[in-house]
Length: 236
Ligand code: SF4
Image (cartoon, rainbow, N blue to C red; front, top):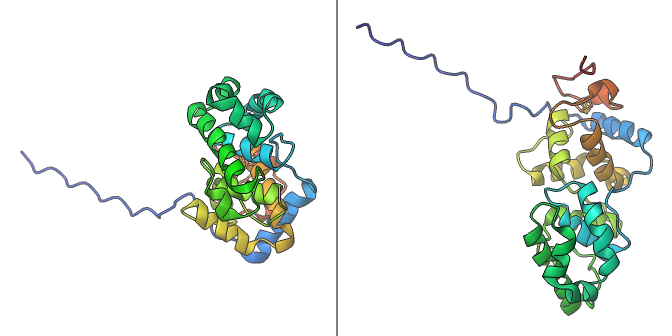
């Protein structure tokens, strides 16, 4: 029996085959300015009344759509829109409103626990300080960044799944981790655009530069994007 033909070794793959060539700083600025021109006053799609309800809404939004969170909070906030009311409502009460969203058991527990800590440590107010926010149950860097940006006007960049994909796919801020993408975006985004850039990128990733197939044919930033496999016509 002849010896088996040895398999041809596979060509080495780049560490992140889907990351595009990193944009030059002026190109990154042009990319963001194109998004800005199309949506000069972007806003979060989460519904909230104040810093506390924003914090709760963002904490509930992990691995869930904003639409689902808004449905849950529409009734939750009618019953409890302050830390004291949320603690009084308790985990069971919170769970009644959020059962349709992902990870609801852990989220109900966290919402009550973070409300209790806000009362104990901050007089019921939401702190405008990253360390204090991240010390709350269920609040990580991304949630803290959204609250600091939207409620307190700080120039933060919350990197969710859409922004992580966009940063890598377009070359705007390639990085292996959400923190690397965040740091790349903060470094390369003009300071005056940083607050709104978070919203532009999330909305662009959610509605145009979609995960499965980007709709490049209707992308306002097409001319500035480094993605090598642009989709230039809608499916037939
Ligand atoms: S939609 Fe296409 S052209 Fe626009 S940013 Fe995404 S990959 Fe680039």
